[in-house]
Image (cartoon, rainbow, N blue to C red; front, side, top):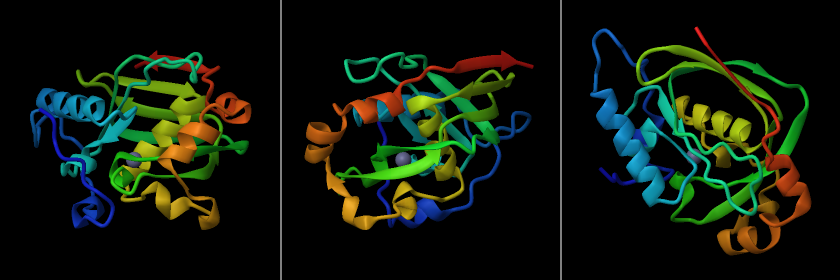
Length: 193
Ligand SMILES: [Zn+2]
């Protein structure tokens, strides 16, 4: 079911998230994942975290549709339950970010984060996996992980004078070679267990 995406300033986004309990589920995980997916697709997002729809549990999902601006995109729907970031590279890069929770303001801004990330999480069946990646997927994973610890990307903007509109982002940044290069996923390793 499509839910309302809460916007920054909503106190619900600041509620501490609890771990999902596979033995005593606080919510129906299948329903929650479906709600997240429906809401993400409806809002034209590539990732969304449970607190953004008012559920304060450590879960987020990602799904990056391939398009002419994103080569080697990861188009699988991935579910990350109780995620933990195992590794973030010292090497960083700048990518412009937007967010479903800043969608009404339609703002985009550059954020510097690690280039390579390794996350450990459980999938919807409760199987543990480790995923190491770079590019837009790495960016997305840290961005969504931050939602689970009540950090919004606007908190990380170093130079507010570089905040731009969605129109300027689509026109100037999205097609730029440096930005496409930073978004490209060249590394994607997944292991289970
Ligand atoms: Zn976001």
